[in-house]
Image (cartoon, rainbow, N blue to C red):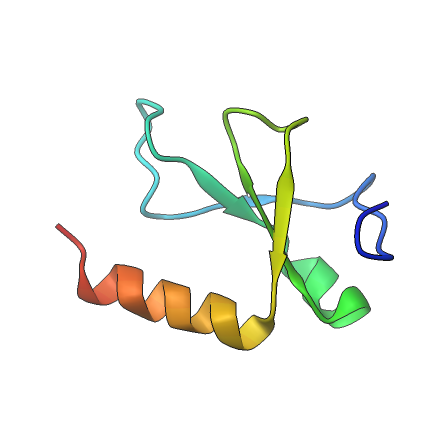
Length: 71
């Protein structure tokens, strides 16, 4: 349990910006936002590693930044 929410049965979604060859792979758990009010984010290459939780507003700002700076 992290930040008062259980991530045991969480469905993780890989970013569409993550390439199939590995590299920069970010996953987030959209279903947890409604339950816990936070957005869990993790590195898909290390699913048992740390999970960062951010506010929905911070996540939206990050996604908008990534979209504007798509290389």
